[in-house]
Length: 627
Image 1 (cartoon, rainbow, N blue to C red):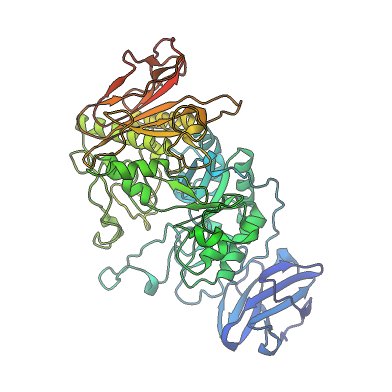
Image 2 (cartoon, one colour):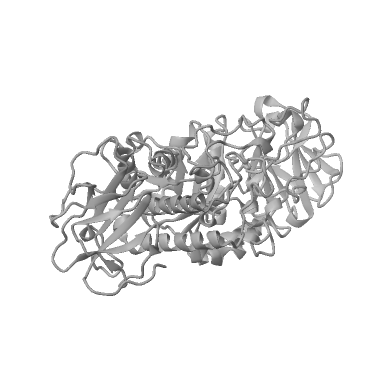
């Protein structure tokens, strides 16, 4: 028992409820105490790092390895707590909120810090909205870092680097056309590790430290990050952000990194908490462990998006069987690697590109992207061929050496107009490739406005201009932003570009043409040539229905990744339809009804390094300037 007189009754707690949870009479505290170690509950007056009460948690009163007590009449707003485990004080791994973490990057003292970080007893927010349940085929995901998204001058937000800052950016995200916001770790990770835990060799670099800016490392997974909150209540602020996103029609997907030794039970507890408490729509799970299959089969998460490196869907669902609801998503670099090679015109890439363009299995959604946090941005993939990670202070040894990039003739920044123009074209090619692929597209935050990390493909420690999104208002970034908006809008307007299931490459409904067919310099060719750098893809509009039930337009997409022009043979359309140019990476998008009708309906010449979209529409109309 505690030595000082207490204001509460100490009752036997519920060992099935980990962390701190409200009961009818007070609060239940549950903690794992492995190996029969000594343990006690420490209580502090709010704002003080002095222990007021220490309540022993004797081994003989444990259930298995769980100690649990209930404190009757404990007042949430007046007390904070920690645990003493085997003589060392520290926070509850199930803590819902923490003190002493309000300043991002603030270095904690290496000694005497055990009482500075304390666990708060927050009031859980009342949910205003529910998860939006947007299907993968209708999703456009935008991934970013809460702090880095709005920190840089020009973002136009008042509360930079915070959940409130994200809310201020909702009109921008909605105008862009995205349907889901994926956030890199928003939980309490430790950005300034103790020296012995840092990657940097301090014997060679005394006094220098690396910041764990991204957040993949030791963490307290249940607590929204206090330094990402503009207010003193990160729990309520995060809940308000999620509700605000939902009210704008945007889902909230959270990224979690779990080390391989994380127990499956812990992972489930974390995901259940964020889903039930905040109504988040999905999770992107990083790390490898025995928990992956368990998470995929969890009943509570069956309508929650679960993204990870990959799933064994045969083991989960059985041979040739599909789930009643597709909640799993495969997020790996296969699309990035294959399509970057195709984009820069490598030999032997057409067959792989055709596969990635149509890939969309019924069992597991495919998340397609050209850039992610641990690679070049889209602007850098056309600017650099070698990584430039010197600012990470690891002698440029960190980060991948396989970027599948092409600098268009000069490494790094240049003033040569021909190279700058080619780089812009290559980025527009990438955007059209991404938005005309059948899987779910993911945008890495800032790519829509040509953001650069200056060749750093592993900016995990760069809490500065390198790691923050640049909101410059240059002519190039503004034009690219407009182009991306049009790409997203075009995809949304054409259901054949984002079907529920992967095309079958056959006319299984007897409409006269296959749902998807491949073409090139010869129409209806059966085999792709190894040295080809061109691909024509036709989607039959009959296999897509718009919201009003009408048939979609047939689309022909010509991908010419060669440095020479090529003639594409065009399929003959049914009577009453002609091929019109809907978009290309040279002129942009044309307003519907004002596209240019092809003078030759049997073939079209496509200039070097260009993607062109043709739409089958009624003849007539006049050509208008591209948007």
